[in-house]
Image (cartoon, rainbow, N blue to C red; front, side, top):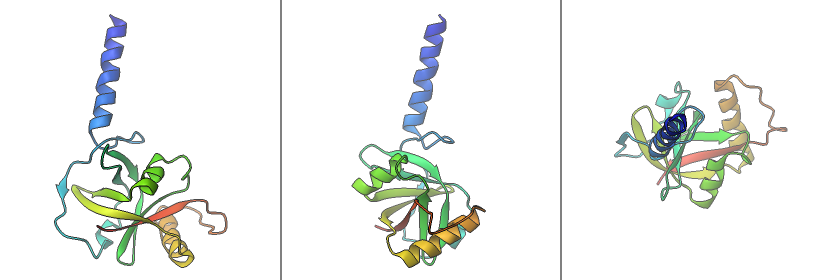
Length: 149
């Protein structure tokens, strides 16, 4: 009987995580929310939002919780561990993403930041927002600018 209960709990948890947005550190599936009808040109409303959800891989949605920053007219997400972040490899294969800020989901396109000036400026803003130490010489992280589709 105990094995049946454990199996049921495993199926319930796995199904919940696969069919919904991310739950804490566990990835989820397709994001729910109101789909934005217009492109955003001013992301400053996201400045005080500490955690957003990013959905990758449209054919089999995969979503994660991430930090974000607004810089210029764009919004950025990033990681200091690109080699272990599955969502990074998803973006390299297909840049189509959906970003949920609050209850609104924005269809976007991810562009890896390769320009040193943009990377350093946006990276510094990211590190300040999350009160982290920033040394561009030692940063092995990646940033993605999320542009309108």
